[in-house]
Image 1: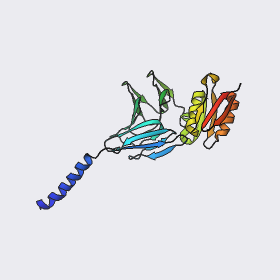
Image 2: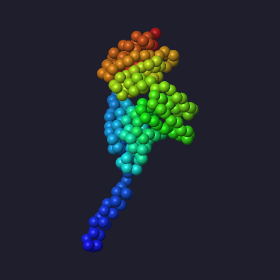
Image 3: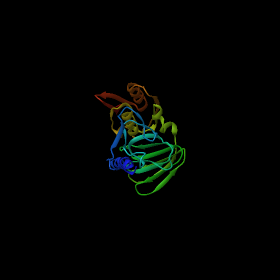
Image 4: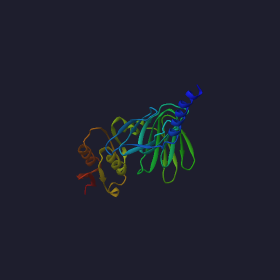
Length: 239
């Protein structure tokens, strides 16, 4: 009997050793400019990626940990697992949760990283070692240059509009206006900030709204001229 049982035990041990030394692969999911992407992670958590965003995670996700890297903006609905905290890592901070709903805006071209909490609780740890806790209805903005942080009341209607296929401009300056257009329509935007000074722009659009219609609105609201050259939208002040 001992000889008969020995073979299966050796086979099982061999399988465990092979798995233990399997190299960890990295998976990437991304949403091109002008599009969004939905995915379900191995632990069942749901992610919605905004345009021009990507996440990376290892093949051992939900085995050893639940850590992923974010470049861009994403909304997360995380399955609860107190034994394996869910960590979203960006170049400037980490967001740690066990189960919750939250949004992280960490586009590389933005001046700040903004984390917004809808439900549950999260802990944020910056690269300088400071730790912050958010409660539902709060946002935390981290300035990338100064590392200063500001708590704000979450304007869910504006912050999560993209999740509901709505494009909202709320007192956006020309820089913010251009970035949103680039993400939403997948085009480049050319402009001279000096021409628009402190001018701001406010309008609500639904997904499917043609860029041409938005150009007409911008021309009226900002006293501007809009034109397309190839894949670039050019916005100029009227002379």
